[in-house]
Image (tube, rainbow, N blue to C red):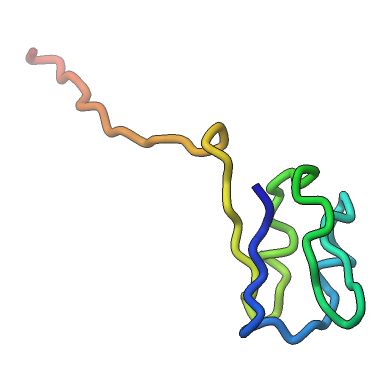
Length: 77
C-alpha cells in the first residue's frame, strides 16, 4: 500500500522524492506522485520529513499488529 499525499497540504517542495530510499515518490510536471506504489517499504521517511505533514501511510494488513494487554499473574495466584 502506497503513501497518500494530500493535495491540499502539499507545497510540492519535492523533499519526499529526494528522501525516499526506493524512489517510490517522483516529481513529474510540478506534481508529486507515488510512481511505484508496490515498491514502498513503509519506512515513513517521506512522512516524517514532510514539512507540511502532507503524507500519511497506509499499511498493508500484514504490517498491522494488534496490541493486546495480557494480565500478568501475581505470586499469590
